[in-house]
Image (cartoon, rainbow, N blue to C red; front, top):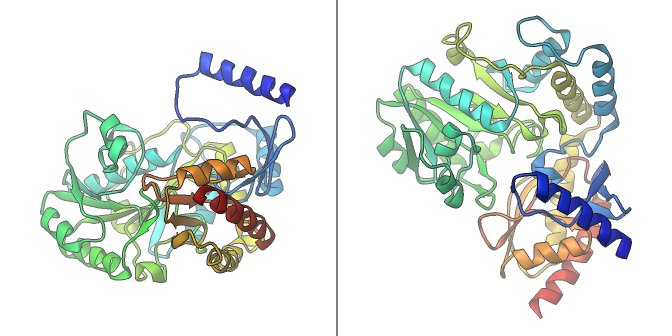
Amino acid sequence: MEAQAAQLEAVRDSEERYQLATYKKMPIVAERGEGVWIYSSVGEKYLDLYGGHAVAGTGHSHPHVVAAIREQAGRLLFYSNLVYSQARARAAEKLVSIAPPELTKAFFCNSGTEANENAMRMARMATGRENIVSFSGGFHGRTADSISATFLGKYREIGKPHVPGHREAEWGDIDSVRGLADESVAGIMLEPIQSMAGVRMAEPEFYGELRTLCDERGIVLIYDEVQTGVGRTGEWFFAGSEAGAGVVPDIITLAKALGSGIPVGACLVNERVASHIKENDLGTTFGGGMIAMAAVTATLEAIENEGMLANVQTVEAYLSERLAEVPSVVRVRGRGFLLGLEFSEPAAPIHQALLEQKIITGTSSDPHVLRLLPPLCLKTAEIDFFIARLKEVVSRTAS
């Protein structure tokens, strides 16, 4: 134990000396990962139900993804979009092939916030308008335009001064949107499931009403699927799903699990929007780089070949059954492997106690909600492991 404590202290001291502060960190020196497990530098094994901010979709260091990255790295690490690339062509074709058929073009960038910035830019180009409507509780990233579209507590505060042209509608309230969506509005952007706000969904008819409103008023509808996309809800995308009344937006933004840990973002765009985009309207040095493109293709292949979408649906149903055995869980929010467990008591002590039991979960801006965003390869055996320890934890924290 003394050696473990000394090693953690040394790494922590080094990071805090040479890095700017970001998140409050867990007391883990992550050394390697496999599937749904993370191993520390001293050999401790953690069940990862958070996936490093929903990134580890295929599981940690999935062999197919690792092999694809290694192979590409041996051929060409990078060249920009000024040349054609077989790796980029394959990734774009594969991504468009799994998208709703209305979305026919892909744009690659480096992160979710960059995808959202470009989506808003495309909406403005397609309409000749400037304003963007987004929602209370929504989170869209930390760069200037994205954080200005974010209406979630402290995140909005740290984004000041805001980019002009952003309006806040009430989540799930179509009348609120109608009152804001005038002839100056270029786009309406939403997380179809608001993750950081506590995993909040609207009723299916709300998404349908948004689609109708946008069609009537010539507004571009943008789904920020940075967290919900790439299979996390048990379908490739929330767009087109029954939970969202089958609605397909004009643009979907993606990142997080898209590259299994390699930084990559993307926008999927329909022909209406794409027809307004000309050469040099959009640009990115690193977006569409060969390593990232190899990771995208391999990620989508791994999810497809191993039946991970069906696995998410099966394991979600099993988890919901098992959670009914935990009296402190008053509600389960969300879909698939983007779930919010609402507790009758504050969730922070439960989060901490689970970490002490070697289980990693996530908190949210709702103090009663614990978030689960595990890899899509999570199995029922790991659910049993989690439930057994959750029962122990809530019995202790409640006493």
